[in-house]
Figure 1 (cartoon, rainbow, N blue to C red):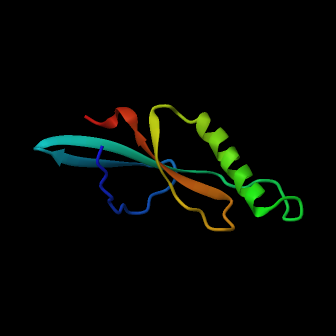
Figure 2: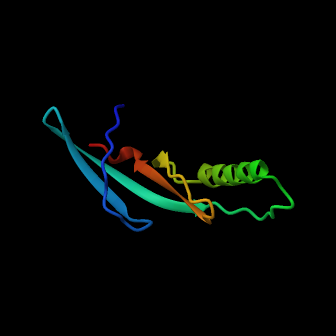
Length: 98
């Protein structure tokens, strides 16, 4: 699949953005969703290194995504701010293309 990057206006969590495109004159519709997941782990700097903390955050995120609705596929993980408590992820609905 080829990718096209489109700037979308800001929308809130749990909202779905519908995008319609024409490919060789045929209209296709895609649904996208951005959701926030916990990016915080319970550790202190004295207890763990930065590497251990990042590893814990990644493992925590992987566990959250393992239980995510299988009708949606992960498209992009946005880089969080250094002090972020949440991380945002873009999903596309699998069955939305018509």
